[in-house]
Image 1 (cartoon, helix red, strand yellow):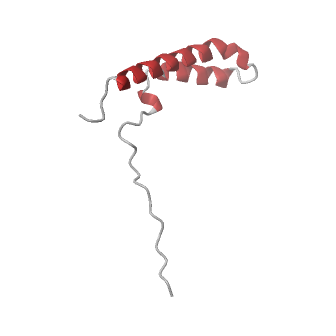
Image 2 (tube, helix red, strand yellow):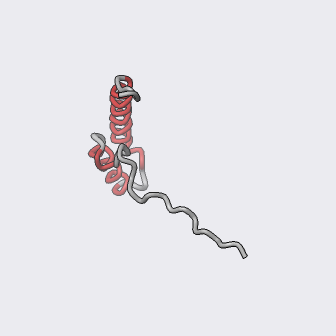
Image 3 (cartoon, rainbow, N blue to C red):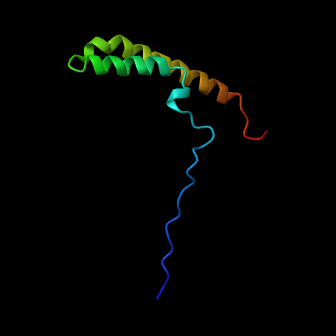
Length: 76
């Protein structure tokens, strides 16, 4: 009878460079848009400006991250 090995459990710690939402510079825009949805769940169009602000912030945050990564080397 062959022994059954238990499946390998991945490390429960998060990846060191993985950003949490609360660490994002866009967290205030995110929370504002969520709060708006909670208040105006029947008319999401009232939150469009907040959605746009959050989207623009995330775009700038991504561009800044890509720029930082362009200057990094894997062979340091």
